[in-house]
Image 1 (cartoon, rainbow, N blue to C red):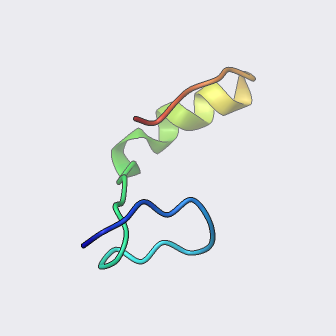
Image 2 (spheres, helix red, strand yellow):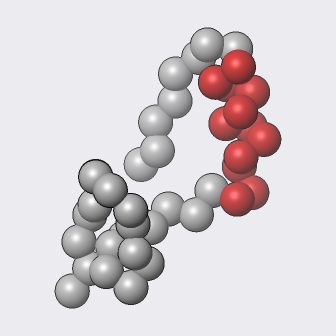
Length: 40
């Protein structure tokens, strides 16, 4: 059974993963602008 990991290295076979490859550019713009965002 997979679990949520909030510390250390995530292992895809053991932990739930969020793949953000397609959204990295958008996230980077938010961070650079000093804005907040959440990942749900």
